[in-house]
Image (cartoon, rainbow, N blue to C red; front, side, top):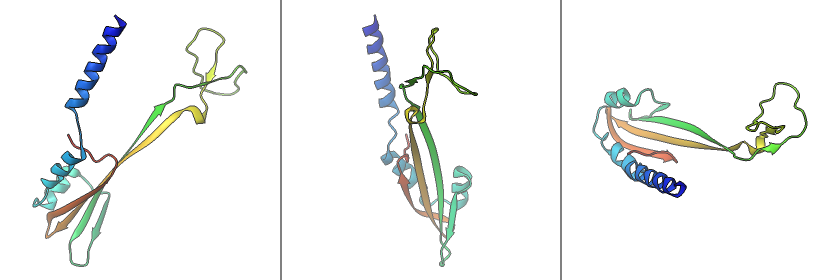
Length: 139
């Protein structure tokens, strides 16, 4: 029964992954749809830019930045047989005398996901784009 559950779970996970394949190529395609569109439509859809640079010739570079931080907690905790003083959070999943206290070096990992997209605006029309980051994806 356990083996069947694992197979079902893996099949579901694989199906979900294949159906929701976001990619940078799709992000490029989405950005290409903005070429030739008015700046006002861009701002209406994307919102307030994080930066705007006005060039000497009157053209502009409008930049939108998204930052997300994901923290994945660790499954490792250090056993602390001594009483804890003060207001300390203790992870104690057992009904015994166990006290597992998470320490900073064992709390897990954090990953920052960034996507910075810039649009080149000429005569109030989107004329080009550029992006950088590790999370510039579209489905």
